[in-house]
Amino acid sequence: MNHTLDAFLRKLELFLLLSLVAVTFVACSDDEAVSEGAKPVSVASTFKVAAQEMPVAYVTSGTVTSDHRVSISSRISGYIRELRVREGDSVQEGQVLVEVDPVDAKQALIQAKADLADAKADLQRYDELLKAGAVTSQQAEKVQLRYKVAKSQVEQARNQLSYAEVRSPVVGVVVEKRLSQGDLAAPGIAILTLEDPTSLLVETYVSERFVSRIREGDQVDIKIASLERTFPGVVRQVVQAADPVSHQFLVKTSLPVAAEVHPGMYAQTGFHIGLRQALVVPKAAIVSRSGLDGVYLLNEESVAQYRLLRLGEAKGDSVEVLAGLREGDVIAWSGNPALKSGMNVQAAGSGQ
Image 1: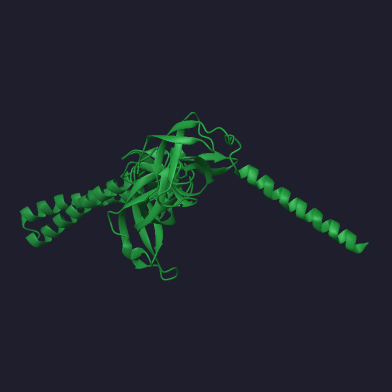
Image 2: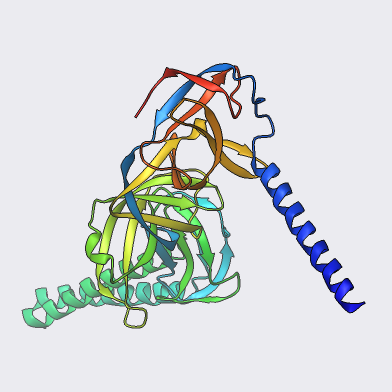
């Protein structure tokens, strides 16, 4: 009884396996193939597959940054009275960004004016004493010098008071706000950070294995994944000092101005580090069926058969073939009538 059951199960397993193979073959075959007896002629474009040189790409990840980044701080100490911008705002050169309460600057100006008034009174008195011969010329000169210093201090205090309005030194975009209204501003403490959106770079790190093949001025491909776009770039700087932890080198590449590209975006940089031989075919020749890609391959009798392919990177109007074709194979597409497996093909044009 057990032997009979085992034999039945083996037969059932073999039947299921053969059924799966048959279904797979049908799915991958051309379900529109012509019958064996009739082979109509289709006039189609043809292409002889040949090896071509393609660049070897080394791809790294990086971040879009601005080449012109400015930290804005106050030249005087005081509490922030008003902050007129926020992150994302565009600003013009000379625009008032922050107002600082200039209590100390006002007090310094009042004190400087008082010192100037006192020095002026002494100067007038010593001028009269000098004319009367009651003081020496050296004593009078010291009073004149004190008056000049007091006058200069008043000008300096007035300049300090004008710094209560913090203005933008450049055209840019506010990318970071570090202090808020009511916070204490002081020289050297950043309040805002501005970036110039018209001067963009991509900063990335490259392995020490490939850094010797990268030169300033090299053309690169910069892909912004979130935009699904690739931009042409140029290597602007290769920092000739590796990071001591990762042993990688910082490389900066310039990025063309585009309204949709902003600092902070994730970017991939493709460096061209050499050439290789590859098989490529026109994109127009690719036929997709059930999620699989293939082409119509011609045999020695110019009969078309659908051939599945494994494709690589697309470049312009061509795409690389990783598996499924050999150099010298001839493919066809855009047939009239529409191509099917088993059709005879007459070349309407050839390319190589």
